[in-house]
Picture 1 (tube, one colour):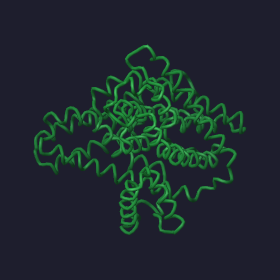
Picture 2 (picture 1 turned 180 degrees about the horizontal axis):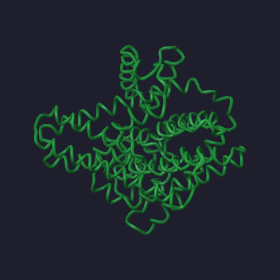
Picture 3 (picture 1 turned 135 degrees about the vertical axis):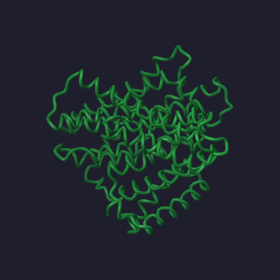
Picture 4 (picture 1 turned 60 degrees about the vertical axis):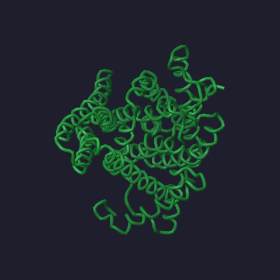
Length: 405
C-alpha cells in the first residue's frame, strides 16, 4: 500500500490503538514508545496493522519534521547555549568514534565488507532524536540531564547524515578526499541551520501581521515542514533546519511575531502533532518488526548490539572526561544514562532502508538494524525509568551534590 492509498480505516485504527496504549501505559507505568511497538507487533500478527511501507522518505518527509520542530520549540535557548560545547563534542566527535569502532568490529568479527560495515556503523552510531526525546519527556528526567541527552540526539544526526551521504557517493564510485568530506559536513550543518533560520524569520515576519491563531498555527506548520524539506532537497540536514527553525520560533516568535493569545494554541497544536507522529511511527515500527527474520541473523544481531553499546561507551566516557575540570562536568550517573539511554530508532531505520542494493550486506544491515532498535526500545527503554529513580535523576529539585552521589 502506498502513502496515497492509506485509508481512513487504517488511520482510524492507528489513532484508536495509540489512544488506548497511551492510557494503559500511563496506568501501568510502561514507557509509551515500548507500548506502541508492542501494539504494532500485535496488530501485525492479528493482520490488523496498517500495510504502509516504512521507508526513508516516509520517516524523513512525514514524521521527523513535526517531532524535531516541536522538540526545538520547547528547548530553552539559554540552557541549550550553555551546554552547546559539551553536546557538540558528544554529537560530532562521539559519532565518529562510535561509527569507527562499530565498522571495524562488523568487518573483523562478521567478515562484512568495509563498505557494508561502514554503512551500518554510521547509521547506528547516532542516537535517535525521536526515541530519545519521547522517552526522556515521559520519564521527566532532571532538566540538565534531559537537555544534554535530547540536544545531543538532535545534533548528532547531522554527522550520521553526512557520513551516510559520503558512503553513498563511494558506493556509486565517487572519490573520497578530506576536502570533500569537510565541505560536505560544513554544508550539511551550516546549510541546514541557515535554511531553517531564513525560513523561520521570513514566515515569522508574515505572522507578525496577524493575531488570528489559526493563521499563526498554519504559518508555523509552513516553517516546520518547509525548512526541513527545503534543506533535504538541497542536500543539507533537515534535522538541523527544523531544529534552528524551532529554536527561533520558540525564542524570537514568542516576543511579538506570535500573538499572546496565539502562543498557547501553537504550543498545543505542536504537542498534538508530535503525539500523533510518535504514535503512528512507533506503531508502524512495531508492525514491521514483527516481519523481520531476526532468527536468521541472530549471531550478527548479538554482535551488532554488543558493538553498538561498546561504541557508545567508548565515545561518551573519554569525551566526558575532557570536561571534568569545567562547569560542564558530567556526573558519573549522567554518563551512564548517556550510554544506556542513547536509544536507537526511526532515523537509524530510515538510513538502513536507504542503503543501496549494490552493497552486499544490504539485507543483513536492515535486519540487524531492526534488531538493534528493538533491543534499544525494550531492553534499554524499559530499564531507564527504574535506573533514573535509583540514581535520583527524576527530581529537578535535587542539588548537584546529591545527583552525583
